[in-house]
Length: 101
Image (tube, rainbow, N blue to C red):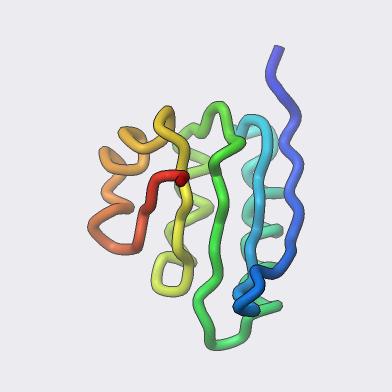
């Protein structure tokens, strides 16, 4: 059984918008994830925003595909489990992918 996806948006002390995803991102909820990404981008017009994936346990190609339209503006924060997936997908070549601290 998969862990349901939840997304929440907040702001860091420096004002940057942060979309935090928790659970699993797959074809069953990739559209909801894409909608959350668009919403986070809308909250930060013209500025980069952070997508925090440190609490994501799994992401499939549908979830990865949802990230690509936003790569010029997003910065990814990832856990060690997802780092290889994001690297193989090439996201680290076209946007910032940082490990959780």
